[in-house]
Image (tube, rainbow, N blue to C red; front, side):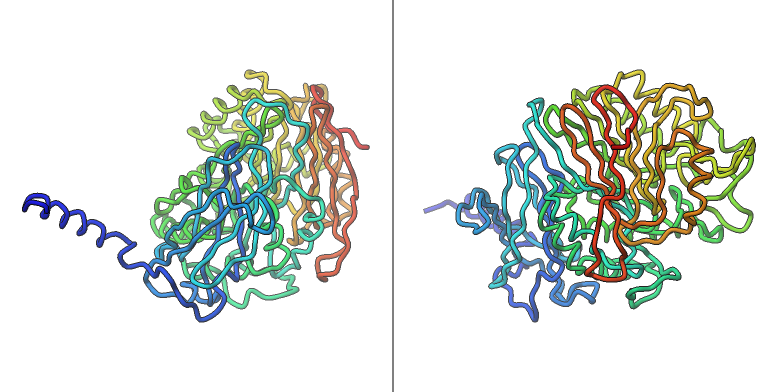
Length: 515
């Protein structure tokens, strides 16, 4: 028996329970079609876990996936074997309609430095089984980190077959440095978006659902954990902070549209819940330790930057310029002052032997004119030389071990010395830069210009504009090897892939050497 006061208390608790999403949830749902057509993914490995992702979308071309407004209960399981017999972690979580019925499961309590397999179950439907891994324990010796570096995958400009070849490399990790989707079309078309430029949340949901169904992209997501950052085409070409390249778009209009783009990005990436956007704002920069061997700092060079200097009179964004005092403004920032301070603290505290800075655009100086005249492209770090100098000073001040800077964006391969002063050929080499070509996106730089660019920019060891592809990077205590993997073409899903060049960076000696 319970007294009146206890009874009223139980009624209050029941009221709270019935007000939760669980009260409205479909616990044993039935779907009109297979609910996992976008596949599964994992990311952000830690020594005791990782993030698991999927999205229920039985009708993927519908921005709501063909589902109603109710939450849907989804069971997840993690096992130590690919047959899912030895399940070591499991649970049930609600896929919420406000987030397009996507799931971001943060698994913890696992063993470090080992492979795991996982799947999702909703009603009587099971997802494919994915494979992922935990990171090594903090400050423990590690023999190797093998990762794939990728960027710039325009769906219309080719097939993502590079990922099929990367899958054979059996990477521990995939590092993606921007332009996961393209919001608009360009001249080259191998296949079609089937819709105009993405502008709204619904548009971006459809765009991600299209890209996610590429079989080679889906397979690599299911085979290894990913860590990601965005560049501009996940929202709008050449945007900077709250500025559109279109001067007629007011910042408040721009940020309202950016809310939809950032929300759709989160809904389709294996991001931790701490990276859930708050309207048009979303902190995605973070660090990923890999034992004592490496630390990867994922940076955001798009959301916080000051507008590109000396823009054209007709539009904003990047510009090719000969001389511009605004370019050297010491207040100019690529990362924003808060992220700059965070990065300084992160690399200062790092005990890793190799310190990788993964970001979007070419970091080293690239003089595009011959002779004494200098011309720069301002959407990359050449538009922000004061910010570049501050970052290099941070690396030197903190005596950061083996810094390596990763980049994408240019749709070309670049391998470079990062010097303290690129205008001084005798300047100290501070770091190595590896800039990857595109998975599919075509370049506008003709191959015949490469020789002249290399002669003008002696700190750049290698440039190649002919190949789409990816980089395969192996880090060991003795050194880092980067294999530049070039596709025969991206027009065919049967295209071959070959190593077009390989470079080695020795422990304690910054700068790449051709091997």
